[in-house]
Image (cartoon, rainbow, N blue to C red):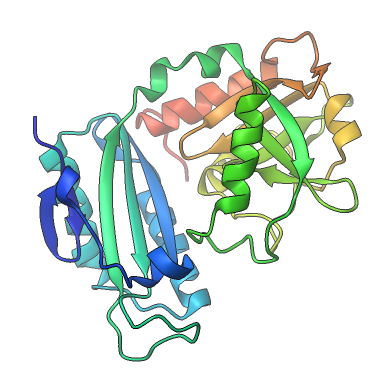
Length: 287
């Protein structure tokens, strides 16, 4: 079956999609992106993801390439053309094409690229078995709250994790506190049963899945605290897990060379994961 991409107003065969060599995303990483999971033929938290995309664009002074309603129609059409019932849609907006100059150009229309990918999310073993993470220094810039396409430090961290036989790398600030993963938010359940995740600030990305998980916890009567935690606290935690649009709720059973709990996904992680997967499948509604 043919696979299509959407590039600057046109649906094109995926292998033929291309941008200009002076697109500022290509030359300066001057752009932002979003990824939305698709489960049971529906986009999960699409509104919240587009709200965050709008915020990222605003923070960098990039204009929408089209109005939001048209943008949503393009997303739906691309998913339909590619017949994706389980997977993801990726969208990227850059400042556009202009002669190479560090200064932002004026009057240049933004560039847009959308692609989809089929991913068997619900059958991935990481959800049931848990994963290993490693810890690395956080070397990113100071505006991690903007979802930019400038991801080289994240790529370096993810590669280091893979080379260590791990799924993810938890980044650590100069005070020894965990910020977040290279592509996920970090959570722990302390020895005294406190559910912790780092406060939303310019240090981390405001994860959409993170926010939905907080809403689920509240509706289920679970308390959580937005509080930074150290590597040592993480390694002595009862449970740990990561959250993201493509990781869902993935238990962490090892940090560096330290086993977490009994080395198996913990009961709270398991419950939160089940509630979230029900939500993704449309079987759980939130107020």
